[in-house]
Length: 137
Image (cartoon, rainbow, N blue to C red; front, side):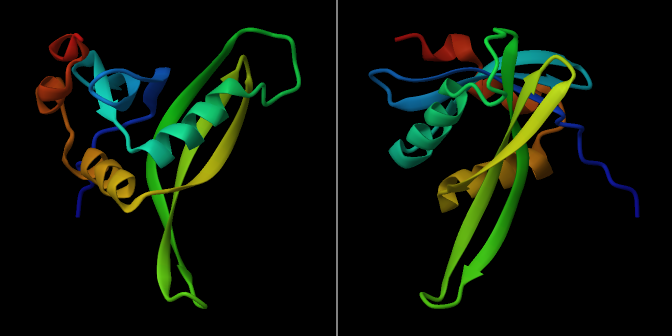
């Protein structure tokens, strides 16, 4: 069986913010056929967690050359006491040659959106409906 999933190594977080439409990430997504800037909607809890991650200086450095990438992989664990699933998402902090993976608990909606991204997004056309310019407020 051949894996036909696109390589989503670069989902660069340009901004985590809120506007009249709601909480979102401004993402620069690079796919085999080019790059696109999209609006990736978030619920309030996921927004706060990601915002707090991207505000922090993870390498205790005064260096300003940081960027963050959203990784399209979700982990699932079972809370045996509550009998509930927990979804774990990842952001990568990059500074020059250094990188750190930061995990955070995310909503089921966020996990589902990441799964959609990983399984179904192959080219720029698949993200056209999320193009940043379509959401001017």
